[in-house]
Length: 103
Image (cartoon, rainbow, N blue to C red; front, top):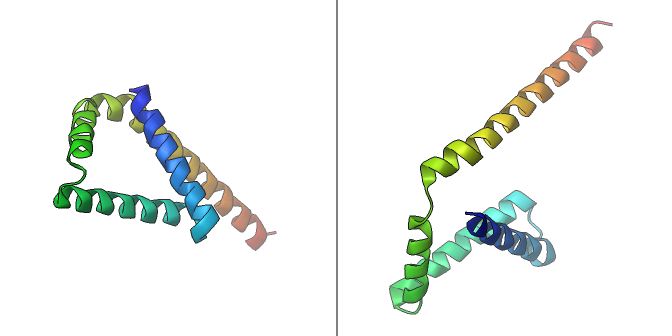
């Protein structure tokens, strides 16, 4: 499972570097656009018949992931942590605005 996370992290870092170096979009938009372009190019190569072995590798990689385990053990805790931090930041902003409004 850590191999899959490492592969995804390396690909994301590479796409972020290419975006920063050549394209200049904000990081989140650039990585998303590059991932979309990469995905569409892989689908196009598979449709032409060039990257059939790569498709089989991708399918086996995705089938090896236990998504319920990944969701419940990894992603859910991170999402809940991020949501609590975001909510805390909103409360702090509201408190600062209230202090400015009522001195």
